[in-house]
Length: 304
Image (spheres, helix red, strand yellow):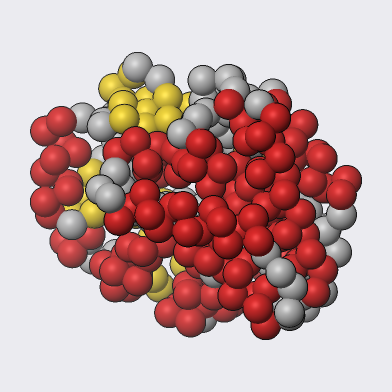
């Protein structure tokens, strides 16, 4: 694999802003493009994008006007927008392009593999950050890191090219022994904290209150049971490790689904309890807490 020198980022939510910032800082503005349609590109240029109070000096590009493939393509859209984003960027994927997704859940890698070929996709989990985005203002602390890997038996060449880039620009990452297990672990915490924060209308501080914590941990235990049935060996130690991580987040920080609820945006409930309920039914595993969260979130979204 050749050295990664150019990066394209599609999706400018909180994580898109974060990684556009880190790659631009590391590689230089001329090597990193924030990709969008023409309308979004005009809006980004006119309104500006801010990270932690500072105006970001990003290079915004109408994806339809870019002709050269990028070496690294990072997807950071909401899951519901992923298939459109794939079509927007299809012509920017060349024979040597590496693709990563910082989307939540366990299904975006599958979508990207079907679209571009599994050999191009490095599996990725964005983790350990606390991010809030309101309008064009994004606040992130800490920045967290990326967990990276490829499924057992897959060619690691693109993974090695990606980690070489991250080493070069001093970006934090880790290489879990089993990336599939790691992704399920992140799904477990997201299914608990994101959905509970949305339903209880609270940030990380509120999740430490007894009833919210009971629901959050209960939802996570249901994910653990389904994961075990899928052959993914999640444990109580994994669960408690995530609870500890969240206790270190700022009390006024908010999971992304709480931000969705406040902004009356469609949430990613289908990626979380939707996935767990579907797989639970296949394995005859009851998921009463995720059933309750799913119904409550559907009711909230119907009232927008």
